[in-house]
Image 1 (cartoon, rainbow, N blue to C red):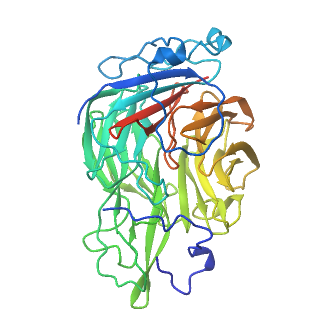
Image 2: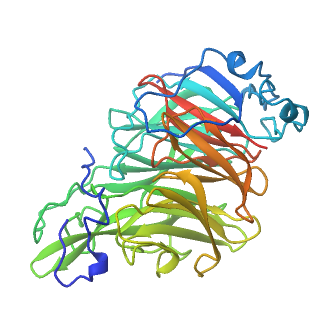
Image 3: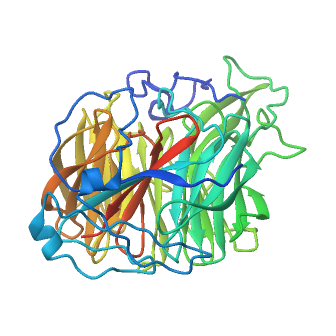
Amino acid sequence: MTDPSGEPASHRADPKVRRLILIGVVAGVLAATGIAVASMPAGAGGLGLFGASSAPTSSSAGALSGGATSAPGASAAAVPSGSAAPSASASASASAKAAAPSGPCGRTVGNAPATKVTQVNVGTSVKGYGGEGDTEALPMAIAATPNGGSWLAWLGTNGKVYLGKLGCDDKLVGKPTSFTGIDLQDVAADANGGVLLLTRKGNCGDGPLCGGSSSPCNTMHMVRFDNSGKLVWERQVTNLSSSRAGYDDGARFVWWYQHHGRLAYDGSNYAAYFGVAITVRNGNCVDIHQGDRMQVVSKSGKLVSGKNSFEVGCSHAWTSRIVWDPKAKKFTMVCATDNNCRIAQPSPYRTVAASTCDGTLFGGDLVLAKSSGYWTAWSQGGKVRLSNFSGSSAAKKTVTTASSSQHPHLVRYGTGKMLLAWQSGSSMKAQVYDAGTGSTVGKSFTIAAKDHAYQAFKSYSDGSVAYPAAGSSGSTIKIARVLAS
Protein backbone atom coordinates (compact mmCIF):
# COMPACT_ATOMS: atom_id res chain seq x y z
CA MET A 1 0.00 0.00 0.00
CA THR A 2 1.32 3.47 -0.83
CA ASP A 3 0.66 6.69 0.98
CA PRO A 4 0.98 10.28 -0.23
CA SER A 5 3.15 12.37 2.03
CA GLY A 6 0.31 14.78 2.63
CA GLU A 7 -2.17 12.27 4.07
CA PRO A 8 -3.16 12.81 7.73
CA ALA A 9 -1.33 10.48 10.08
CA SER A 10 -4.62 9.07 11.32
CA HIS A 11 -5.23 7.60 7.85
CA ARG A 12 -1.91 5.84 7.45
CA ALA A 13 -1.43 2.16 8.10
CA ASP A 14 0.51 1.99 11.38
CA PRO A 15 2.16 -1.45 11.74
CA LYS A 16 1.61 -1.30 15.52
CA VAL A 17 -2.06 -0.71 14.95
CA ARG A 18 -2.80 -3.15 12.17
CA ARG A 19 -0.64 -6.22 12.71
CA LEU A 20 -2.83 -8.18 10.28
CA ILE A 21 -2.61 -5.99 7.18
CA LEU A 22 0.41 -7.86 5.80
CA ILE A 23 -1.02 -11.34 6.28
CA GLY A 24 -1.75 -12.42 2.74
CA VAL A 25 -3.01 -11.80 -0.77
CA VAL A 26 -6.38 -12.90 -1.94
CA ALA A 27 -5.62 -15.52 -4.64
CA GLY A 28 -6.80 -15.25 -7.68
CA VAL A 29 -23.05 -30.95 -6.54
CA LEU A 30 -24.55 -33.07 -5.13
CA ALA A 31 -27.65 -33.17 -2.93
CA ALA A 32 -26.64 -34.91 0.28
CA THR A 33 -28.09 -35.82 3.62
CA GLY A 34 -26.85 -34.48 6.94
CA ILE A 35 -25.24 -36.83 9.45
CA ALA A 36 -24.17 -36.82 13.07
CA VAL A 37 -26.88 -34.67 14.61
CA ALA A 38 -26.10 -33.86 18.23
CA SER A 39 -28.50 -32.15 20.60
CA MET A 40 -27.27 -31.36 24.08
CA PRO A 41 -28.12 -29.01 26.92
CA ALA A 42 -26.05 -25.99 27.71
CA GLY A 43 -23.26 -26.86 30.04
CA ALA A 44 -20.04 -25.54 31.46
CA GLY A 45 -16.73 -25.92 29.64
CA GLY A 46 -13.21 -24.72 30.25
CA LEU A 47 -11.42 -22.08 28.23
CA GLY A 48 -8.41 -23.21 26.28
CA LEU A 49 -6.11 -22.53 23.36
CA PHE A 50 -7.43 -22.77 19.80
CA GLY A 51 -6.93 -26.34 18.63
CA ALA A 52 -6.41 -27.40 15.04
CA SER A 53 -8.79 -30.33 15.12
CA SER A 54 -12.44 -30.17 14.14
CA ALA A 55 -15.10 -30.26 16.81
CA PRO A 56 -16.28 -33.80 17.58
CA THR A 57 -19.09 -35.09 15.39
CA SER A 58 -20.45 -37.47 18.07
CA SER A 59 -21.73 -40.94 17.44
CA SER A 60 -25.44 -40.27 17.80
CA ALA A 61 -27.96 -37.78 19.03
CA GLY A 62 -29.14 -40.09 21.76
CA ALA A 63 -25.66 -40.61 23.14
CA LEU A 64 -25.31 -36.93 23.93
CA SER A 65 -28.85 -35.86 24.56
CA GLY A 66 -30.49 -38.75 26.30
CA GLY A 67 -32.96 -39.08 23.43
CA ALA A 68 -33.91 -36.11 21.28
CA THR A 69 -37.37 -35.93 19.80
CA SER A 70 -38.42 -34.58 16.46
CA ALA A 71 -40.41 -31.39 16.34
CA PRO A 72 -43.16 -30.73 13.79
CA GLY A 73 -42.00 -28.98 10.67
CA ALA A 74 -43.39 -27.14 7.68
CA SER A 75 -44.21 -28.66 4.31
CA ALA A 76 -41.84 -31.51 3.50
CA ALA A 77 -41.30 -30.23 -0.01
CA ALA A 78 -39.83 -26.96 1.24
CA VAL A 79 -38.65 -27.40 4.80
CA PRO A 80 -38.74 -30.95 6.15
CA SER A 81 -39.22 -31.49 9.84
CA GLY A 82 -36.71 -33.04 12.16
CA SER A 83 -35.45 -30.34 14.51
CA ALA A 84 -34.26 -31.84 17.75
CA ALA A 85 -35.70 -30.72 21.07
CA PRO A 86 -33.43 -29.78 24.00
CA SER A 87 -32.04 -32.62 26.06
CA ALA A 88 -33.54 -33.70 29.35
CA SER A 89 -30.59 -35.76 30.55
CA ALA A 90 -28.49 -33.03 32.16
CA SER A 91 -31.22 -30.63 33.19
CA ALA A 92 -34.49 -32.12 34.32
CA SER A 93 -35.91 -28.77 35.33
CA ALA A 94 -35.19 -27.30 31.89
CA SER A 95 -37.08 -30.12 30.17
CA ALA A 96 -39.94 -30.01 32.63
CA LYS A 97 -40.48 -26.31 32.01
CA ALA A 98 -39.89 -26.38 28.26
CA ALA A 99 -42.44 -24.37 26.31
CA ALA A 100 -44.37 -25.58 23.27
CA PRO A 101 -42.58 -25.65 19.91
CA SER A 102 -42.26 -22.24 18.29
CA GLY A 103 -42.15 -20.87 14.75
CA PRO A 104 -42.79 -22.51 11.36
CA CYS A 105 -40.16 -25.20 12.05
CA GLY A 106 -41.57 -26.10 15.45
CA ARG A 107 -38.23 -25.83 17.21
CA THR A 108 -38.58 -26.25 20.97
CA VAL A 109 -38.14 -23.26 23.24
CA GLY A 110 -36.57 -24.41 26.51
CA ASN A 111 -35.92 -23.03 29.95
CA ALA A 112 -32.20 -22.77 29.11
CA PRO A 113 -30.19 -22.72 25.87
CA ALA A 114 -29.70 -26.10 24.21
CA THR A 115 -27.34 -26.76 21.31
CA LYS A 116 -27.86 -28.89 18.24
CA VAL A 117 -24.99 -29.59 15.82
CA THR A 118 -25.79 -31.08 12.41
CA GLN A 119 -23.06 -32.14 10.02
CA VAL A 120 -23.92 -31.77 6.34
CA ASN A 121 -22.07 -33.36 3.43
CA VAL A 122 -22.20 -30.67 0.75
CA GLY A 123 -20.59 -32.85 -1.93
CA THR A 124 -17.86 -30.37 -2.91
CA SER A 125 -14.55 -29.26 -1.41
CA VAL A 126 -14.99 -26.34 0.99
CA LYS A 127 -12.33 -23.67 1.47
CA GLY A 128 -10.47 -24.34 4.70
CA TYR A 129 -10.16 -21.92 7.60
CA GLY A 130 -6.47 -21.23 6.92
CA GLY A 131 -4.93 -18.62 9.18
CA GLU A 132 -8.27 -16.80 9.66
CA GLY A 133 -6.65 -13.44 8.99
CA ASP A 134 -8.81 -10.47 8.11
CA THR A 135 -7.37 -10.46 4.59
CA GLU A 136 -8.14 -14.13 3.93
CA ALA A 137 -11.17 -15.70 2.28
CA LEU A 138 -14.25 -16.58 4.32
CA PRO A 139 -15.23 -20.25 3.97
CA MET A 140 -18.97 -20.12 4.66
CA ALA A 141 -22.04 -18.09 5.67
CA ILE A 142 -25.67 -18.79 6.59
CA ALA A 143 -28.98 -16.88 6.38
CA ALA A 144 -32.37 -17.48 7.98
CA THR A 145 -35.39 -17.76 5.67
CA PRO A 146 -38.90 -16.59 6.69
CA ASN A 147 -40.14 -20.21 6.73
CA GLY A 148 -37.58 -21.21 9.36
CA GLY A 149 -35.09 -22.88 7.04
CA SER A 150 -31.75 -21.52 5.84
CA TRP A 151 -29.61 -20.69 2.88
CA LEU A 152 -26.07 -22.03 3.32
CA ALA A 153 -23.27 -20.54 1.22
CA TRP A 154 -19.72 -21.84 1.02
CA LEU A 155 -16.57 -21.04 -0.92
CA GLY A 156 -15.30 -23.87 -3.03
CA THR A 157 -11.70 -24.55 -3.96
CA ASN A 158 -12.47 -24.13 -7.66
CA GLY A 159 -13.31 -20.43 -8.06
CA LYS A 160 -16.99 -20.89 -7.26
CA VAL A 161 -19.34 -19.89 -4.44
CA TYR A 162 -21.95 -22.57 -3.71
CA LEU A 163 -25.46 -22.08 -2.37
CA GLY A 164 -27.68 -24.73 -0.83
CA LYS A 165 -31.09 -24.70 0.87
CA LEU A 166 -31.44 -26.22 4.34
CA GLY A 167 -34.69 -27.50 5.84
CA CYS A 168 -35.90 -27.23 9.40
CA ASP A 169 -33.56 -30.08 10.34
CA ASP A 170 -30.54 -28.11 9.01
CA LYS A 171 -30.02 -30.67 6.22
CA LEU A 172 -29.73 -30.00 2.50
CA VAL A 173 -32.92 -29.87 0.43
CA GLY A 174 -32.41 -30.37 -3.30
CA LYS A 175 -29.26 -29.71 -5.27
CA PRO A 176 -26.93 -26.75 -4.53
CA THR A 177 -26.25 -24.16 -7.21
CA SER A 178 -23.02 -22.23 -7.81
CA PHE A 179 -21.82 -18.81 -8.92
CA THR A 180 -18.45 -17.49 -10.06
CA GLY A 181 -16.62 -15.99 -7.10
CA ILE A 182 -13.16 -15.99 -5.53
CA ASP A 183 -14.24 -14.86 -2.06
CA LEU A 184 -17.52 -15.19 -0.16
CA GLN A 185 -18.60 -12.35 2.11
CA ASP A 186 -22.17 -12.92 3.29
CA VAL A 187 -25.61 -14.26 2.42
CA ALA A 188 -29.03 -12.83 3.36
CA ALA A 189 -32.55 -14.08 2.69
CA ASP A 190 -36.14 -12.94 2.17
CA ALA A 191 -39.42 -14.56 1.12
CA ASN A 192 -38.47 -14.63 -2.56
CA GLY A 193 -34.89 -15.89 -2.27
CA GLY A 194 -31.93 -13.83 -1.17
CA VAL A 195 -28.63 -12.16 -1.98
CA LEU A 196 -25.02 -13.30 -1.93
CA LEU A 197 -22.18 -10.83 -1.41
CA LEU A 198 -19.05 -12.09 -3.16
CA THR A 199 -15.81 -11.02 -4.83
CA ARG A 200 -14.72 -11.55 -8.43
CA LYS A 201 -11.52 -10.96 -10.35
CA GLY A 202 -10.94 -7.45 -11.66
CA ASN A 203 -8.34 -5.43 -13.56
CA CYS A 204 -5.68 -3.15 -12.05
CA GLY A 205 -4.71 -1.43 -15.30
CA ASP A 206 -1.26 0.11 -15.80
CA GLY A 207 -1.20 2.72 -12.99
CA PRO A 208 1.38 3.87 -12.47
CA LEU A 209 1.65 3.52 -8.70
CA CYS A 210 3.67 6.11 -6.83
CA GLY A 211 5.46 3.25 -5.11
CA GLY A 212 4.99 -0.16 -3.56
CA SER A 213 2.63 -2.88 -4.70
CA SER A 214 -1.15 -2.89 -4.29
CA SER A 215 -2.95 -5.84 -5.80
CA PRO A 216 -5.13 -7.58 -6.82
CA CYS A 217 -7.86 -5.26 -8.11
CA ASN A 218 -11.06 -7.24 -7.67
CA THR A 219 -14.73 -6.32 -7.65
CA MET A 220 -17.52 -6.83 -5.09
CA HIS A 221 -20.96 -7.98 -6.25
CA MET A 222 -24.46 -8.59 -4.95
CA VAL A 223 -25.93 -11.70 -6.60
CA ARG A 224 -29.70 -12.00 -6.36
CA PHE A 225 -31.15 -15.55 -6.39
CA ASP A 226 -34.70 -16.89 -6.28
CA ASN A 227 -36.17 -19.61 -4.06
CA SER A 228 -34.71 -22.30 -6.29
CA GLY A 229 -31.24 -20.81 -5.93
CA LYS A 230 -31.15 -19.56 -9.52
CA LEU A 231 -29.65 -16.24 -10.62
CA VAL A 232 -32.06 -13.28 -10.90
CA TRP A 233 -29.63 -10.37 -11.26
CA GLU A 234 -26.09 -9.22 -10.41
CA ARG A 235 -24.91 -5.78 -9.35
CA GLN A 236 -21.34 -4.60 -8.79
CA VAL A 237 -21.04 -2.45 -5.64
CA THR A 238 -17.45 -1.41 -6.27
CA ASN A 239 -16.98 0.87 -9.30
CA LEU A 240 -14.57 -0.72 -11.78
CA SER A 241 -15.65 -0.82 -15.43
CA SER A 242 -14.30 -1.14 -18.95
CA SER A 243 -13.14 2.47 -18.68
CA ARG A 244 -12.01 2.49 -15.03
CA ALA A 245 -9.39 0.03 -13.78
CA GLY A 246 -8.17 -0.33 -10.22
CA TYR A 247 -5.19 1.99 -10.66
CA ASP A 248 -7.27 4.82 -12.14
CA ASP A 249 -8.00 7.87 -10.01
CA GLY A 250 -11.31 7.49 -8.17
CA ALA A 251 -11.44 3.69 -8.36
CA ARG A 252 -12.98 1.72 -5.51
CA PHE A 253 -11.99 -1.94 -5.60
CA VAL A 254 -11.27 -5.02 -3.50
CA TRP A 255 -7.64 -5.89 -2.81
CA TRP A 256 -5.50 -7.95 -0.41
CA TYR A 257 -6.07 -5.58 2.52
CA GLN A 258 -9.07 -6.20 4.82
CA HIS A 259 -12.13 -6.28 2.58
CA HIS A 260 -14.71 -8.42 4.37
CA GLY A 261 -18.33 -7.31 4.12
CA ARG A 262 -21.83 -7.85 5.52
CA LEU A 263 -25.38 -7.51 4.19
CA ALA A 264 -28.53 -5.99 5.69
CA TYR A 265 -32.13 -5.90 4.37
CA ASP A 266 -34.82 -3.28 4.96
CA GLY A 267 -37.70 -5.26 3.49
CA SER A 268 -37.15 -3.91 -0.01
CA ASN A 269 -33.49 -2.98 -0.48
CA TYR A 270 -30.24 -4.72 0.36
CA ALA A 271 -27.23 -2.84 1.76
CA ALA A 272 -23.62 -4.03 1.51
CA TYR A 273 -20.99 -2.64 3.88
CA PHE A 274 -17.41 -3.73 3.18
CA GLY A 275 -13.76 -2.74 3.05
CA VAL A 276 -12.36 -1.21 -0.16
CA ALA A 277 -9.19 0.11 -1.72
CA ILE A 278 -9.26 3.82 -2.54
CA THR A 279 -7.26 5.10 -5.52
CA VAL A 280 -6.10 8.73 -5.30
CA ARG A 281 -4.03 10.63 -7.88
CA ASN A 282 -0.74 12.03 -6.56
CA GLY A 283 0.89 14.01 -9.35
CA ASN A 284 1.78 11.69 -12.21
CA CYS A 285 1.04 8.53 -10.25
CA VAL A 286 -1.60 7.13 -7.88
CA ASP A 287 -1.61 6.07 -4.25
CA ILE A 288 -3.78 3.30 -2.83
CA HIS A 289 -5.47 3.74 0.54
CA GLN A 290 -8.04 1.64 2.43
CA GLY A 291 -11.41 2.44 3.90
CA ASP A 292 -14.95 1.15 3.82
CA ARG A 293 -17.93 1.60 1.53
CA MET A 294 -21.70 1.15 1.86
CA GLN A 295 -23.96 0.71 -1.16
CA VAL A 296 -27.70 0.04 -1.37
CA VAL A 297 -29.34 -1.99 -4.16
CA SER A 298 -33.07 -2.17 -4.91
CA LYS A 299 -35.12 -5.34 -5.35
CA SER A 300 -34.77 -4.87 -9.11
CA GLY A 301 -30.96 -4.71 -8.91
CA LYS A 302 -30.44 -0.96 -9.27
CA LEU A 303 -28.11 1.14 -7.11
CA VAL A 304 -30.08 3.37 -4.73
CA SER A 305 -28.74 6.73 -3.55
CA GLY A 306 -29.14 7.99 -0.01
CA LYS A 307 -30.21 5.58 2.76
CA ASN A 308 -26.92 6.29 4.60
CA SER A 309 -24.84 4.93 1.69
CA PHE A 310 -21.40 6.43 1.07
CA GLU A 311 -18.26 6.21 -1.06
CA VAL A 312 -15.84 6.01 1.88
CA GLY A 313 -16.60 6.05 5.61
CA CYS A 314 -13.92 4.88 8.03
CA SER A 315 -10.23 4.81 7.05
CA HIS A 316 -8.48 2.61 7.79
CA ALA A 317 -11.37 0.25 8.51
CA TRP A 318 -11.82 -3.34 9.59
CA THR A 319 -14.64 -5.52 10.99
CA SER A 320 -17.28 -3.41 9.26
CA ARG A 321 -20.77 -4.28 10.58
CA ILE A 322 -24.29 -3.22 9.58
CA VAL A 323 -27.88 -3.66 10.79
CA TRP A 324 -31.29 -2.45 9.60
CA ASP A 325 -33.16 -0.59 12.35
CA PRO A 326 -36.92 -0.79 11.60
CA LYS A 327 -37.82 1.66 14.39
CA ALA A 328 -35.40 4.36 13.28
CA LYS A 329 -35.94 3.31 9.62
CA LYS A 330 -32.25 3.41 8.77
CA PHE A 331 -29.17 1.29 8.18
CA THR A 332 -26.72 1.69 11.05
CA MET A 333 -23.04 0.75 10.85
CA VAL A 334 -19.95 0.49 13.02
CA CYS A 335 -16.30 -0.08 12.16
CA ALA A 336 -13.03 -0.58 13.98
CA THR A 337 -10.62 2.12 12.81
CA ASP A 338 -7.18 3.52 13.52
CA ASN A 339 -8.61 7.01 13.06
CA ASN A 340 -8.24 7.90 16.75
CA CYS A 341 -8.25 4.15 17.45
CA ARG A 342 -11.91 3.47 18.26
CA ILE A 343 -15.13 1.72 17.44
CA ALA A 344 -17.01 4.31 15.39
CA GLN A 345 -20.02 5.01 13.26
CA PRO A 346 -18.91 6.03 9.75
CA SER A 347 -19.72 8.92 7.42
CA PRO A 348 -19.28 11.09 9.39
CA TYR A 349 -17.15 9.69 12.19
CA ARG A 350 -18.93 9.37 15.53
CA THR A 351 -17.17 7.60 18.38
CA VAL A 352 -19.00 4.65 19.90
CA ALA A 353 -16.22 3.39 22.17
CA ALA A 354 -12.72 4.81 22.63
CA SER A 355 -9.74 2.47 22.51
CA THR A 356 -5.97 2.54 22.04
CA CYS A 357 -3.61 1.89 19.13
CA ASP A 358 -1.86 -1.26 20.29
CA GLY A 359 -2.84 -3.67 17.50
CA THR A 360 -5.46 -5.54 19.58
CA LEU A 361 -8.63 -3.61 18.66
CA PHE A 362 -11.24 -5.68 16.80
CA GLY A 363 -14.96 -5.26 16.27
CA GLY A 364 -17.43 -8.09 16.76
CA ASP A 365 -21.04 -7.72 15.64
CA LEU A 366 -23.82 -5.13 15.78
CA VAL A 367 -27.37 -5.95 16.94
CA LEU A 368 -30.54 -4.10 17.91
CA ALA A 369 -31.07 -3.41 21.60
CA LYS A 370 -34.30 -4.46 23.34
CA SER A 371 -36.31 -1.26 22.97
CA SER A 372 -34.15 1.13 20.95
CA GLY A 373 -30.51 1.66 20.11
CA TYR A 374 -27.83 -0.94 19.55
CA TRP A 375 -25.29 -3.23 21.15
CA THR A 376 -21.91 -3.88 19.57
CA ALA A 377 -19.31 -6.41 20.69
CA TRP A 378 -15.63 -5.54 20.46
CA SER A 379 -12.31 -6.60 21.89
CA GLN A 380 -9.27 -4.78 23.21
CA GLY A 381 -6.30 -6.60 24.69
CA GLY A 382 -8.17 -9.89 24.40
CA LYS A 383 -11.02 -8.75 26.67
CA VAL A 384 -14.49 -8.62 25.16
CA ARG A 385 -16.75 -5.62 25.74
CA LEU A 386 -20.40 -4.93 24.92
CA SER A 387 -21.22 -1.28 24.23
CA ASN A 388 -24.76 0.14 24.09
CA PHE A 389 -25.37 3.31 22.05
CA SER A 390 -28.19 5.20 20.36
CA GLY A 391 -28.39 7.61 17.44
CA SER A 392 -25.16 9.53 16.96
CA SER A 393 -24.14 9.44 20.61
CA ALA A 394 -21.22 7.57 22.12
CA ALA A 395 -21.93 4.44 24.12
CA LYS A 396 -23.92 5.18 27.25
CA LYS A 397 -22.95 1.84 28.74
CA THR A 398 -20.03 -0.55 28.21
CA VAL A 399 -19.93 -3.98 29.83
CA THR A 400 -16.59 -5.73 30.21
CA THR A 401 -17.48 -9.41 29.91
CA ALA A 402 -15.77 -12.43 31.46
CA SER A 403 -14.81 -13.82 28.04
CA SER A 404 -11.30 -13.65 26.63
CA SER A 405 -11.12 -13.39 22.85
CA GLN A 406 -9.94 -11.18 20.02
CA HIS A 407 -12.95 -11.96 17.84
CA PRO A 408 -16.33 -12.09 19.61
CA HIS A 409 -19.63 -12.91 17.88
CA LEU A 410 -22.90 -11.24 18.91
CA VAL A 411 -26.42 -12.07 17.69
CA ARG A 412 -30.03 -11.39 18.75
CA TYR A 413 -31.39 -14.45 20.55
CA GLY A 414 -34.75 -15.49 22.00
CA THR A 415 -36.98 -12.64 23.16
CA GLY A 416 -35.24 -9.51 24.37
CA LYS A 417 -31.87 -11.26 24.64
CA MET A 418 -28.60 -11.59 22.75
CA LEU A 419 -25.96 -14.29 22.56
CA LEU A 420 -22.23 -13.64 22.81
CA ALA A 421 -19.96 -16.42 21.52
CA TRP A 422 -16.21 -16.82 21.30
CA GLN A 423 -13.46 -19.36 20.60
CA SER A 424 -12.62 -21.87 23.33
CA GLY A 425 -10.09 -24.47 22.26
CA SER A 426 -11.49 -26.48 19.35
CA SER A 427 -15.06 -25.48 20.33
CA MET A 428 -16.88 -22.29 21.22
CA LYS A 429 -18.22 -20.83 24.45
CA ALA A 430 -21.38 -18.73 24.66
CA GLN A 431 -23.24 -16.55 27.15
CA VAL A 432 -26.74 -15.09 26.97
CA TYR A 433 -27.21 -11.39 27.85
CA ASP A 434 -30.26 -9.22 28.38
CA ALA A 435 -30.54 -6.97 25.30
CA GLY A 436 -31.80 -4.12 27.44
CA THR A 437 -29.54 -4.05 30.49
CA GLY A 438 -26.53 -5.99 29.27
CA SER A 439 -26.75 -8.32 32.28
CA THR A 440 -25.89 -12.00 31.96
CA VAL A 441 -28.76 -14.50 31.77
CA GLY A 442 -27.95 -17.97 33.10
CA LYS A 443 -24.59 -19.69 32.82
CA SER A 444 -22.13 -19.87 29.97
CA PHE A 445 -22.16 -23.02 27.85
CA THR A 446 -20.21 -24.85 25.15
CA ILE A 447 -21.02 -25.11 21.44
CA ALA A 448 -19.31 -28.15 19.90
CA ALA A 449 -18.22 -26.44 16.68
CA LYS A 450 -14.98 -24.85 15.56
CA ASP A 451 -14.89 -21.07 15.65
CA HIS A 452 -13.82 -18.83 12.76
CA ALA A 453 -12.74 -15.31 13.64
CA TYR A 454 -14.82 -13.57 10.95
CA GLN A 455 -17.88 -15.73 10.33
CA ALA A 456 -21.27 -14.81 11.76
CA PHE A 457 -24.15 -16.27 13.73
CA LYS A 458 -27.59 -15.47 12.30
CA SER A 459 -30.87 -15.15 14.20
CA TYR A 460 -34.16 -16.89 13.29
CA SER A 461 -37.78 -15.88 13.82
CA ASP A 462 -38.28 -18.66 16.38
CA GLY A 463 -35.56 -17.15 18.59
CA SER A 464 -32.87 -19.70 17.77
CA VAL A 465 -29.52 -18.82 16.18
CA ALA A 466 -27.27 -20.76 13.80
CA TYR A 467 -23.60 -20.73 12.86
CA PRO A 468 -21.80 -22.52 9.97
CA ALA A 469 -18.56 -24.21 11.00
CA ALA A 470 -15.89 -26.51 9.59
CA GLY A 471 -16.97 -30.13 9.35
CA SER A 472 -14.96 -33.25 10.04
CA SER A 473 -13.84 -33.49 6.41
CA GLY A 474 -13.10 -31.11 3.55
CA SER A 475 -16.56 -31.57 2.03
CA THR A 476 -18.68 -31.21 5.18
CA ILE A 477 -20.04 -28.24 7.13
CA LYS A 478 -21.43 -28.26 10.65
CA ILE A 479 -24.52 -26.19 11.41
CA ALA A 480 -24.36 -25.26 15.08
CA ARG A 481 -27.80 -24.17 16.32
CA VAL A 482 -28.62 -22.78 19.74
CA LEU A 483 -32.33 -23.34 20.41
CA ALA A 484 -34.29 -20.49 21.96
CA SER A 485 -34.85 -20.17 25.68
